[in-house]
Amino acid sequence: MSSVELVVKLRDALQMAADACQEYLERIAPNDDKWNWNPDNIKWEKAVGSSGPYERSQNKENVDFQKMVEDLKAHNGKLSRDGYFYWLFTNGDCVGRKKRK
Image 1 (tube, rainbow, N blue to C red):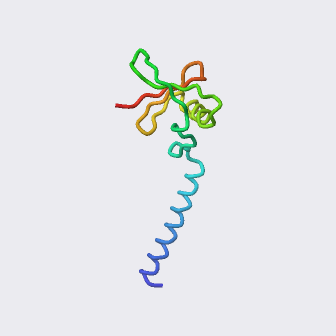
Image 2 (tube, one colour):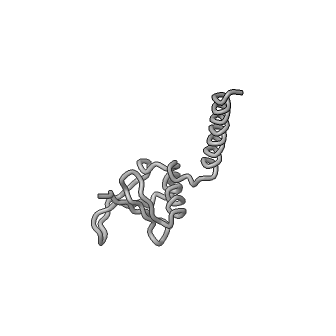
Image 3 (cartoon, one colour):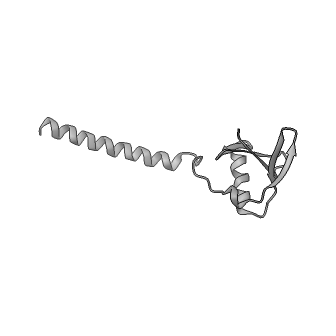
């Protein structure tokens, strides 16, 4: 076996190992990049608080709202997505969102 053949086999083996690692990480990694809820499907109402205007929702019957609340609970009640900051009110049944500057 030539040194070129050896390097090619080594490269292929390392690529297979890297692919296996990637598949494993995708299975166990938190699903932070993949959203299972769509904020456009949620009814938002305009509101004003001590920090200025924001939007809020209590759309409990909406599946996207329920998934958003689950996601917020998994992130300690706060997260940012697509230019918005979302938070879960302390009562746990209302969500606020505000456009990030």
